[in-house]
Image 1: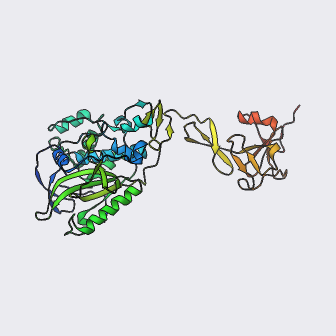
Image 2: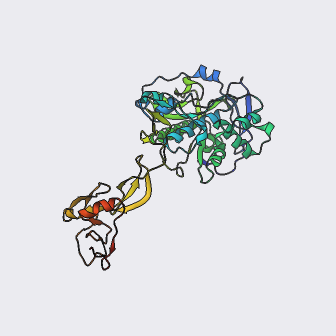
Length: 428
């Protein structure tokens, strides 16, 4: 049922939405199925929808709800038929802040900078440049702005992937072509986009069929319950003419008793809107996160401290691995103050005077070791010890380092030397 967009699909025309007069478009989808539709204009939106006033719990802290509700200043421009780009950039911006800060290259990221409190921080969601662009000479505008404007950068990627001439560059994109964007952004790994459309229920299926409506409704809500925003194409469907009117691309990001809420991509009055019952979902899809590792971002700044969308502090600096934290039963790992782990591990070290106790604290990472559980046993047995220091510290076969008082400072400074037990130098 789902189409995984890693296969080249033939698209003769894509969805349109923007600030035009009503224009009828005759298009052919990727499977050759003919559809007729008109795109949604901003006037259509204002006539059919009302912004939703909400006090959702997520609106007072970092989260998916507050992010999309406040995504306006740094949301791209929705005009000239670009809603397919606008909604997908919003979608990618969310994951750049809450999943992995490398999804959108740093040069394209925009945020409000430093603020003094949480409410101010979430009031303007981070995203990309909002820049208006002309209704003609798109190719020239893209070439002049693609290094700063993420929307222009993606338009360039997609139009180049089609092999279009400069005069044929298009403002529009359909869900079935998002794989072109992902291929351009993720050049060293495979990130796919899967979607389901009405005709996956049968060539005679219609968006107004009860089973189609029910399936999309369940699918979207299931994904939202998992914490995944969902890309949607919506339209009004005319049963008598088989035409789609007010076709539009949006991002769904939560639901309640009023319905599914989405960002419609125009001004601040379109960031939280319930999809009206007169509109049907025609396509729904999500990006695979399997090959996008979860890392922290630095897209929010409060009192000069960077914060990830997850709420954790993020320090933008060169890591200084000056401390150690518990790693496993026998060792700890170097760690920066920001919480980032390095690659160097060292064995736990305990004071020899504590040997015999069940619980002993590592003198370097300060973790309280259960000697029965973490180390199996730690009892001195001279026949098993191979490495010792001049003062009598030793290393057990399981890796534990047992230190006498005289050696602790040397160990902490990295100067303590262990010798083969039969070759220990004699003092004096």
